[in-house]
Image 1 (cartoon, one colour):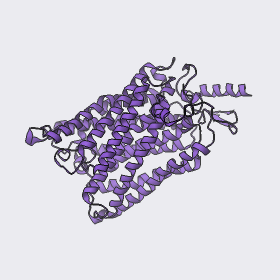
Image 2: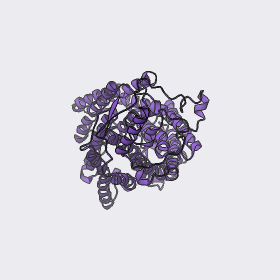
Image 3: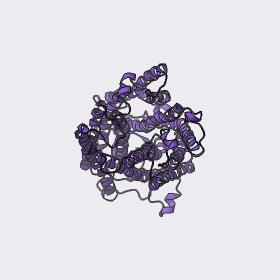
Image 4: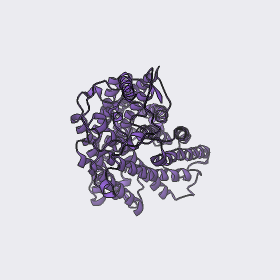
Length: 558
């Protein structure tokens, strides 16, 4: 078998008769108990994978019910109160139980020790605890659903969350409170691991950009999540004991909740998107056979995004009576936060220029990420402008913008990462044709779903209503049809990736001919990761080094 590495064609050992390694992290122990008590970061990553997939499809089911309700102008599928609970539970599950933990919990857990040449994360027991805490929070969220649901929206906005009784706010708030500690534990583990456990020769500027992105996101987790936890506790105290924290009739400040909630929740956007940006950097470099253009700028842009993320929260509050002077400052800061994001997009584009590009499935998902995230970012400029925001806020324009950033960005990156590292995680390849079909279907379905919502929002249709004027029905029907296509695109990977576990071709250690340390060991990796500590003796994304290394291996085999 031959493959192109840079401009060099080399012959690789034939994989047609290859076998999975006899000893790896999946089969070294048997029984459910060994998984539930494991301290192996790779196994914990798989536990996260099963968990976030489960919650994703529950959250997706609520999205489907929302779109079915909106097929007609009147609430004839469910009552308005039930519809409120649908979009609340959809938001809570998708944000806190899928988007926040998906890439760090699955790909971060699996890859960070492998990428830095370590045998595990710094605190293996803390890592396992973070998964149990996450599951406890997820279970309590489902309990709130079974008990009757929550109808405040995922933002727990006061006074809805503090005064009205037909909702299980405290149960859901405590579920998110608990889940937040999983993020904090994961962030601490990643920060310490990246600081203290890099192999010899791996300086900060020889680290893969995947690590830079997770490092920046971990800082946000550790610094921002406690603010959300405190806010939810205050909501519970006011609801239970009538303490005047947010209620002005009792001496509270109604804007205080907004400041506290959005101080966390806007950085949370970058907790969800920064790890995805790290995935895109790895995939684009591999399938264009080039070092990322402006590596240092891309690395520091991750830190800049994390820093700016803490200074833009008030752009969610422009219509809430805040000072016009502070609104002007936050509008400017909102424009500035687009700069480091744009650096990444432009540098990825320059990386592709004159690269030896191939269009494997992970690359298709990355192209989808770049297109959808760019639309989401540009429409965010409209919402950051004071005049436009007054017209567009609380309309479907916000819904479309948010989904283009978080789902079009975060979920596309997650799927890119799963497809890119699936051979490493399982030792098996998936069918390439159907996986490309899934990527294209997802991209088309996503645009059919959310592009009409930009128009709906511009025309003034408010979000979070089960009923709407009949003149908006055509666009809502188009959006629901797109959601059907999108759901099909999401189901396909579940089917063919499961199929590949038994029937997929043996992947070999480095099927993409990538340069990272994780690709220099067997697939699936052994339990101990590395038999001896590796030495990083080359620059990151050095494909000439890889070509020379492969030539030597081929010569040895010959």
